[in-house]
Structures are given as C-alpha cells and as structure tokens.
Image 1 (tube, rainbow, N blue to C red):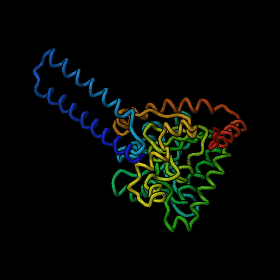
Image 2 (image 1 turned 90 degrees about the vertical axis):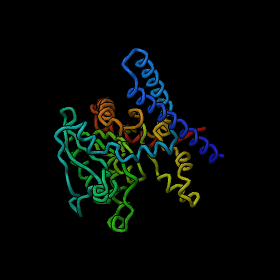
Image 3 (image 1 turned 135 degrees about the vertical axis):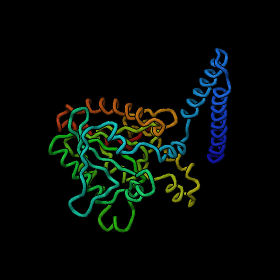
Image 4 (image 1 turned 60 degrees about the vertical axis):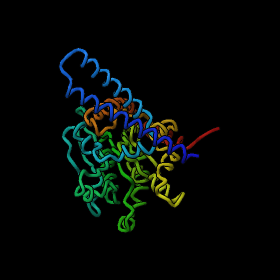
Length: 325
C-alpha cells in the first residue's frame, strides 16, 4: 500500500514540475516576442504570479526522498561557505596531535559579530578532486579528535562553539576502525555533554548516523528546511530491511528524517527556512536567515552559568526518545 501511494505521489510531483517548467517557458517566450505595452506586461505578470504560486505549493509539499535529494545537492552551501558568509577572521586549526590532519572536518577560530568563537563542520568538496581529498565529508578518527581538541580549547578560553553538520556518516574503512573510530565518536559525545560553553548545532545537509552526532550534541540544534538527520541513510536502511537499496524512497518516508518530523519529535529545536527550491539557489539569503536564528539562539544561552547550561543540556538529551500514548 505504501509503495502504491509513493508511486502516485511521484507521478503527481512530476506532472506539477512539468507544469511549472512549461509556464516558465511561456514567460520567457512572451518576454522575447511581446511588444512593449500594458497588455503584454499584465499577461507576463499574471504568468509570473502563477509560476510563483505553483512553485510555493510544490516545494511546500516535498516528500522525504525529495528532501534527501535536496540535502545532497552538489551546489548546496558547505561549512566553508557558511564560514565565509557568517564569520570574520577565520583561522583554521589542523591535526589531532596524535596521527594526522583530516580534511573532511573543518575546525578553527573566528569572530561572530565581533565575539571570538570556535567553528567545527564537515566539508564535502565541490568537484571530484576536492571530494576525494575531503573523503566526501566522511571523517576519520583523527578528524573527530581534532574536533575534540578544538572543543577543549573553546572550554579553556570560554568561547561558544558553532558546528555545521553535513556528512553521510563517519568513514567506515578498515584503517579508521583500526585507529578507533567508535571510541573517538563516543569520547566526543561524552565530552560535548559536559563542555561548559554554549554549543550551537546546525544540520545544513545530511546528518548521517554517528558521524553527524559526534559534533551535534549541543544546547540548540537547528535544521535547514531541506536537510535530513537519521541513524542511517535511506539506501542503507532499505538494504538491511528489504535487501534492496532501490526501496530507498520507502525507507526515507518510514525513517522520519525530515526537519518537520524531527521538530515534531522534539529532536531538534528549530527549522531554518530556505529559499524556494533549496539553499543552493540563494546561499546568501540562506546564510542571512541562519544568522538571525544563530544570534537569537546564542543570546538565549550565552549568559547562563555553566552549571545551569550543563543541567539544561543534560535534561534536553534525557528527554529524547520518551514517548507516551
């Protein structure tokens, strides 16, 4: 039954997208052919309004799988884009002082509206060369240990921490496991739970499994409208449940991984609206909206005494997963 409904929904979305594309072509054709005049301008304006209404309706009712595709869009803003648009004086920190530097995780110091802060975030890379160099945003143990080093510096110098989550998950390679991938993630979770400084988390694209959670335990957790956050990817879930990764769309719906689902379950605190069509269409506008949300969140926790901050953080995560009929 679920499969039939999904098929029907996909066909409906395809028809709606074709209708939007046809109207946009009509607008372009009218602009090219029409003489200057009030009648032509009125018709063009009417079509533009119709396109805008259809787009709003279309993007307001995207399914979970469509959100996954937007979260993975290759032109979507990454951590370094947000660093450029939101912060000043960024100085990157490299290495975990134990094994190596991990380019999949960006860590460093910066100023946020004049105040010193620390930044941590995954970086996927734009082209094939960058993606290989940054391992598609999949961090290894040295990446999480580098992030922990930065968190400890933040605690020492009493600086708020901003994290930007966008990863399919922690790297599952043999070398990463040999160097203690699970231990590195677990240690980050333990230490983040007791850091005496504000931690503001933003899921900007994919929030995949423990690889995301290792930098996502914070006082305020935000999700961009078209981001996703899950214990497993839809393809991975489908492979386990049905031995068939092509059923990823069904898995995406069942996992409840969208921002609206997670806000309803109180696993995140706030949804950050994106421009119609996704953050990749207007990164500057997305960053401006996110800036307002981050400033308000920082004000809400910045002046709390460390004991109160830690108590609230503890209660926040203790409440997660408690459901009553």
